[in-house]
Amino acid sequence: MLIVIGGLPATGKTTLARLLAARTRGVHLRVDTIEQAIVRSGLARHPVGPVGYVVGYALAEEQLRQGHTVIAESVNPLAVTRDAWRDAAVRAGVPVLEVEVVCSDPDEHRSRASSRSVDIPDLPLPDWEQILGRDYEPWHRDRLVVDTAGQQPEDSLGPLVEAVLRADRG
Image (cartoon, rainbow, N blue to C red; front, top):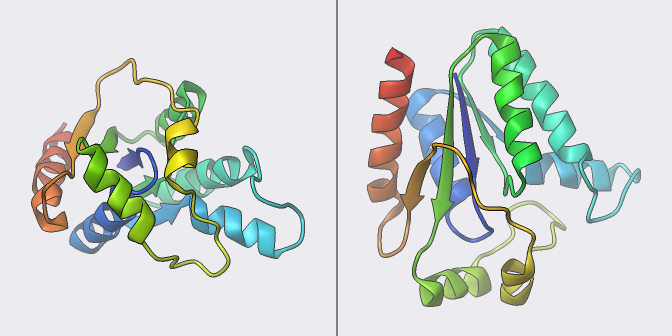
């Protein structure tokens, strides 16, 4: 199955995706990693535009066709990006679970944004003002919303694992 995890920066997407990948033995595709590899190649500079997502869709579909569970993690800010992930799952003939990770406490979200560290060399992290000013379209279809405010990552993971098990059963 394809599990698409989106949400604004500093909400906990990467942490949850890594925990879920370890729990499910799924393939974790992180668009930040793809985009930074493209920048390191010298072919582009930040922001790279849609290329990181397009590469991600192709990698996800290939891994899905090989029978792997894929956890695709990115901001996923636009309906067109959300549709493209879903289309990759449809083409591969697998179910898709869409997840939006939020941090409903603005003070906690801001604190996370200012205190997190870079785990991908030379990846520029957005500051709080850039996070607030980012284009992020509202979701207009069903998805699992995971609110990480005031929780440890393992606590936020519980509802996500339950939803994956339900979706996998069909």
